[in-house]
Image 1 (spheres, helix red, strand yellow):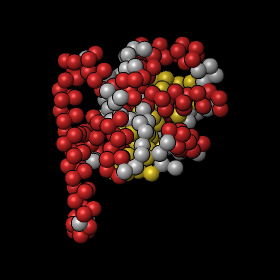
Image 2: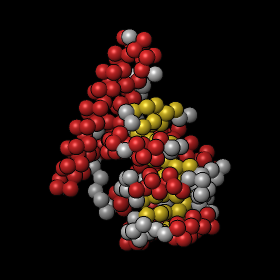
Image 3: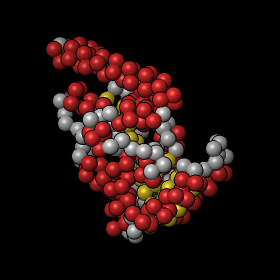
Image 4: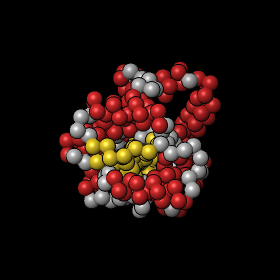
Amino acid sequence: MLIKKRILSINVSNGSHQDFVDSIFKYAENKQSAYVCFANVHMLVEAYNSPAFSTVVNSADIVAPDGLPVAKSFSLLYNTSQKRIDGTSIMKKVMRDCAVNGKKVFFYGGTQEMLDKTTPYLQSNYPGLNVSGMYAPPFRVLSKEEKEGVVEQIKASGAVIVFVVLGCPKQESWMHEMKGKIPAVMLGIGGALPMMLGIQKRAPLWVQKAGMEWFYRFSQEPKRLFHRYASTNSTFIYLLVSEMIRTKIFKLNPSLAANAA
């Protein structure tokens, strides 16, 4: 069972890897319109700076702690153990289970070139997976009619899982808009698909376990990622330390917490 706890600007789900998978399939079994966000440092800081985006993420049914700093925050703030739940591993597990159970999936987002590479990859690595549809939207705002067409296409496909590949924060906003319209679980997997296809290289396992995957990405694209990492990482550390101090003060003096509430 997943329980959400406040990590700085958003409510992040706490549970085991299997808890996350089970919760996703519970929504899928009921054909419930739901969506899953994978929260990293970038998303937390974006939500902190944007109340509108914070609402989008906090409206998600599941917010997985993708990124070791987010997972470690549970221990620092709540003395609660939490492992990293990354989008790539969840996507792979969901696809394996869907292939076994005959559940239909849909891919929304990315480029047509990426989706063209996805089909043979899935046929080779996930035989039996029923991909009921794929759609690469144009790089512009869709009209009302186009959005309605997408909704009808996904509904007609019978998919109970929709993998959304638009990147943060676009995919989270799209899922928020589509909640209640698409009777499926939407997973905002972002860069997980290009990594799985080998379009983007993923850090070695030991680098992931050390919590240095962000540095591995930075070493590949230093010019593009320098400002983002310099800004978001420093902001995250500042906010986390501030929250730890505030929490400790409130524990020492409960009356302050009562007054703050």
